[in-house]
Image (tube, rainbow, N blue to C red; front, top):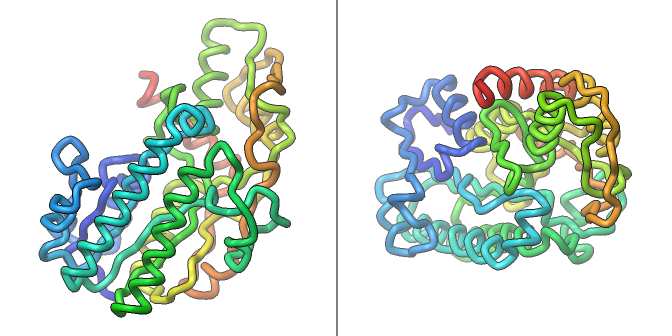
Length: 312
């Protein structure tokens, strides 16, 4: 698909990932006036009538909009995490189906995978068990978008694809302590501790859990490449393929920030899923995506942006 000739609806385009996807589309030669970004204050995607208006005249929908945060957000707002994400996807995809658009790109999540699963996670194992409890409402809401996409492809021939995204990080991320993900939350906490000469920092969990992180610019490349080249019913993992323990992640951030104090692990707080790393072979095979940014290089760029822009 030549995206330069398409009218694109980019939900969540004003958010963290959306800004990178917008930039990537421009780099591909898509004119800015062909990309429409609905703002949540003006367009409630939980409203079917709003979705029907937004998709009119759009050839491609890239659905990034989400109610999302870290473990703290998921524990505090499980109802919001489920309802907002499920209803946005359901109404938007239904409106798109009725409009006769050409392609719907849905962004799912690694949180949809079962809690206990041999790593790396394969797309074939997506239904092998229940998700980790603290993020199950969010993960299941996103998983229903996959079910809807597959059902619509079977019944209506709708070209809807589904990408399973690991945790993202990078410049322009959300660093607010209440609803940020693990990397920006740790960067902010450790940077503040250094600034205030604190002797120690408390981190949730034991540090033993492992995660996979993807630099946002790489994620944007994957999304655009899939929009151009992928047209299958099967979901696709999008990640870096690099597994790291939370303890090792904290150590790298401390070194890059220059914090030499003590890390105090609060084992009364949840670790979340014990291991999380994806089998990313399908993405490379189907549309040639492979992450280009190492974790340390990405963290350095993120921390540099944090000090230059966020904490200026």
